[in-house]
Length: 419
Image (tube, helix red, strand yellow):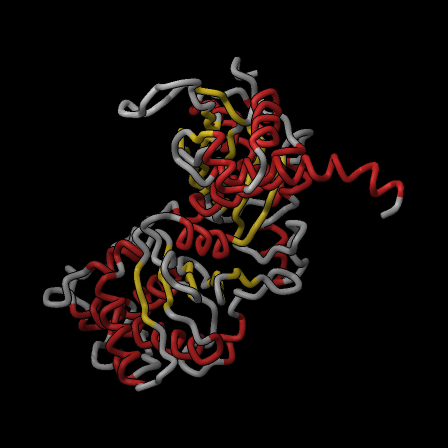
């Protein structure tokens, strides 16, 4: 061992020990004792006590006398510690094209406040930066916390992102406008900024939340299906990103017969509804045949000026056959997508996530039937997410928490006064 390495090894060892203790503390929901830490880490009592004292001084842990009611109190009481939930706050943002939402959570992951703003979808990069900043300010104010306690921001964008949070300058400017330099714009001393693809964050949420549809699956695909299809790919427990973050962009679907684009459910339903009402529908699949535009009843949801995709997905097939045909057409398309992705990636399941998931029960049933007709042994199971429209924000909170926890020893914790 060199002199330099010998001189620095005690510092490195102390850091490794502190990381071990913090990792265990964050994995628990209540208080922990020194004995718990000794049993879990294999460290000596004196080392554990020294590390905990240091973490208390730095503000990440608090010493507590929260002993169990039935625990005997003979002799010297056990030293107990708990994570200080207020030691840091994180903000997760879903910077969608039509809706920007944010959630602020404490160090335990408890969401304290949520806010959102709607946009017209045509904002410039400068306008998107201003909107995201305003939403972050709004959620911090709504939570009533000091802005200096926010130690990490995670922004979800509808674009691929590389390891540094930047998006390729391609796709006719859509990616660059979707992610107009958020990493640099939001940077501040003592604060981590992470920018990631929105479908990746949805996949993180599905795998991390107790009710997530990917929590018990080794390999899954989470599809965000609003305006454009995007996928978060989890293979053998790892999120795939690719060299430029484009692993789940699905542009290969442009070359798949019967699919032809990455258009999402909402965009397709609006387009098909306009065609049907105008009498210009030209079905691309036999399942969509037999409902010419001039048979769309005046009472059909397809006539609504403010048509929402969920209106079509939830329409009663018995009273609105025109809407039912669109859902059947979408199911045939989605089944083909699932078969192609299943053949390529051999995943356990495909999870439909985002705002339309709650309206997708019939679509999922029809898609399952269409998948079964392929008789493909690699066909995945298809499920609808139960995490709602805030799935990306939820994943962003998880990602921001992970960033803080990984870098805690390089950050300052907020003190008891909240300063």
